[in-house]
Image (cartoon, rainbow over all chains, first blue to last red):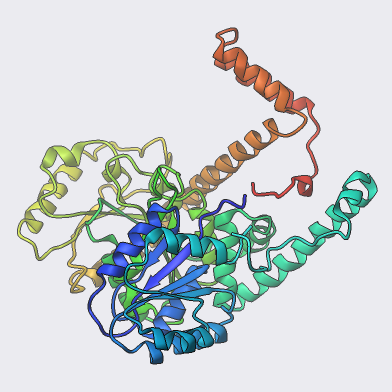
Length: 134
Length: 376
């Protein structure tokens, strides 16, 4: 009964057109037994939140390479809270400088996975921290 | 999967072990739990019908995960369903189902009709994981409040849908959507379950996918109310459509419908249309044909499709319930012993089935909320 797959939204907010990493992660999490909703490129924060709400996901994973993370990620976290999705785990990946991580965590991003992170360690983090379902 | 309280959490008695030992306290706990479930279901159903999209999403999760809330929710919402037009979209992988659903949604929204989509993708038989990618083609609608898109993993269910897809479509129907598109997994030739789940079944073909012999094989094309050759801008699209038309007309003289949908109203021959979903060409005509099919079906044999759908749903639940009963405390020993007898060739499978049915007859039904956890 508690063995329902964790549902994860993988989204790419912003304007960079490079989603290899997001697709590799989506595929990798599928292989780890997650149900992964992939939304594709160039998402606005509103689109990400709308998808998270309709899909009722446990985790929102955001991949961002454009450098706009300090604008987009806090906005997504705020919109998620406003939509009543404050129990959704938010994680980020891509190119995010270490010095920005504390501010992102302050804004509501639970973890930042940089280049070189293994799929297995992401999966482990999500299993340990995603909200439980019955 | 440990951290984080959710609203699906069970109320905990103060001293669980002591209470579990006391039958009266246990009964009181079950009573309280049932009342709590009913109250939460009533609130969620009311919010869903009032247009709360967050509530709707949670109802769909409860139904999909078969949580204890699912039954009291469906008991409230099912009577409100039956107004939406449920449209099945099926066809081989890569034929353009998601793109076509997005284009049909655009056409329906231009007419002001609220649209819901249930898109099913396959679960891995190895890990149970799934990659649900249908939203990629539907992004244009993600900011529209009157479009609701939900992805579902098939979770081991064969037939092109998930086991709970029909129930999810009923929830979206009850929530007031005018059109509910049900997109199957990429299908081959035999995944025809969609015909029982939808009022109108649209079968997609891509150009140059096969010759006339493919069109006269049994299966998917037999359950089509409408056949669409998508990617109409590709060479060969018109030729494929012409081949399908000639074969479907030739083969449809005395068709009475397959055993899956006996008495199902069908056109004498399915209309064959050509669309280019990526540009929207032909999509308006397809939506008009979908609407016409429903009107025609309603005039000819009102209720036959609904009856087929009702039978499929009830039958699936009945099988599930029967299995659960056979594995409950009262019957587990009899069930295991009977199965071992069949395995050892001491009993034939037919006699075994009769013996188990008799055992169920003689065993009193357990109370509804006494099932621990209640995932079924």
